[in-house]
Image (tube, rainbow, N blue to C red; front, top):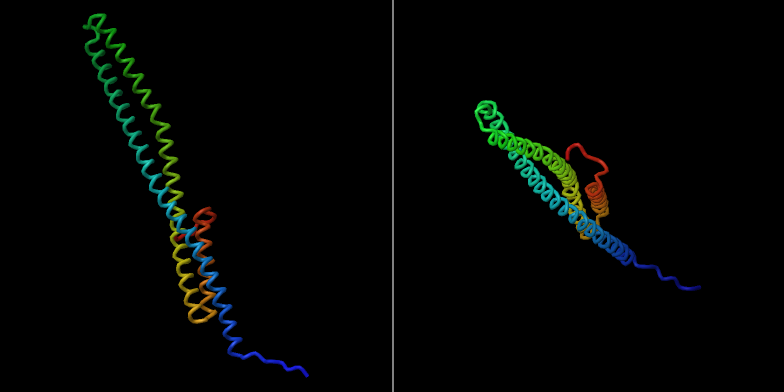
Length: 194
């Protein structure tokens, strides 16, 4: 009869724990990759948020400058109309014609500034809308990043303690972090507390 060698139970336990450790170490590396991607998305969202806000502010400042110019021309138009009504009959024909031509120029300029400022306001509103989208995305990246960091810590703890329960908590945290990170990129759903 052939002799069968029975494995040592401690060796089996060590092999099992080694395989568990290797799997979790590999999964921890995957968590780290997701963490980098979510972190990069968060950094880009913050940059785009800041840039959109700055560009919107610039557009509103340009709009305000156009509005001020429009108002200056409007005031000048009213002043000229008042002057023509008050002294129009006493002016020489050449001076009267000059004032009327100037009044037409001022009225045209006032209208031009009024029409030029509307596209500027529309562009500023569009930039504010972009800013609001990045503002809505940013918390998802932040919380996704935190959950992935927690998942890495829990996975490391499970390697040290060989506790499968801690590993499952790390898996749940990682899945939640990845879901929040993906939502930061695509804004599929909005959580009411963000």
